[in-house]
Amino acid sequence: MRVLKRPVMKSAREERNIFVLARASGLAEVAAFVREANRRHQLRALLIHADLEERWIGQMLHRADLRTLKYTHVHRTHDLPRRVLKAWEFGCQDVLIADAVALADRLIVLTCDLNRIEVPWNSIAVLSRMEPKLRAHFQVASDGSFLHWPDGDIHLGIDAFREAVDPVAREIARRKHQVLREEFGQAVAMLRDRHGLRQGEIPGLSSRQVRRIERGEGFPRVSTLEKLAEAHEISLNDYLDRLAHLQIEIRES
Image (cartoon, rainbow, N blue to C red; front, top):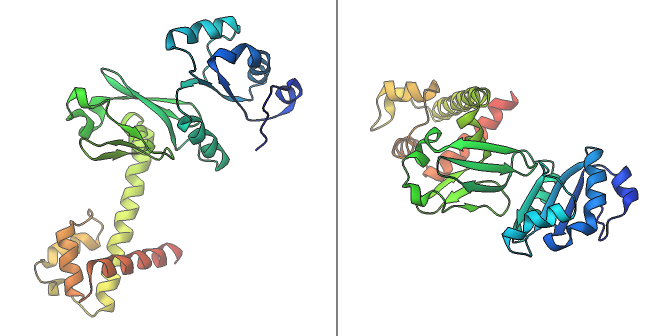
């Protein structure tokens, strides 16, 4: 990553994946650079630090002759530009969250590539049940990996928002979850076999319950996992660790 402290037009004409961080009061100084980078379709973000009151941001954009740009975002702290630049540095700009805002009928989530996802509250069950006045009380994780609502101890990442509004993303997630359930079930069966246990020899669980778990028909509850661990005469943490290693074996086989 190359950092320029002043706008050099040669860079605007030649460089790729350009990010401009500017104060609202200094937009006129970077306007020509921004226009050229945008003309070449290489402007990835214009991140404006609001060093003026919000009502003056529009006037500063007009003064700099910068028309509304898709990849423009205004911020007051340095958390947002840090998130955006780090995400691009690691190539995960489309799966991390830059910012979000709660409206009356929906949540708008901005990814670190500054694309927008609009999520109606009623499309996510845990948010639809939340009191409307609490919906705006969320925090963006410092790395952009999730939004956190402390009032309900709710953590949601970008996948949850995409799956809520995109049928294709929802179907892909369903298939991934099914594969994970099947791998988990196979691991449970393998570990049971290695301990010489039959399906009907798990105290507190019926053969049918164990069979359903091993077929990948849903993830078991913690209380069920505790019974499985106890039957294997190991702690729950050890049981889960061994299942995790077996799942790796299954994927690599």
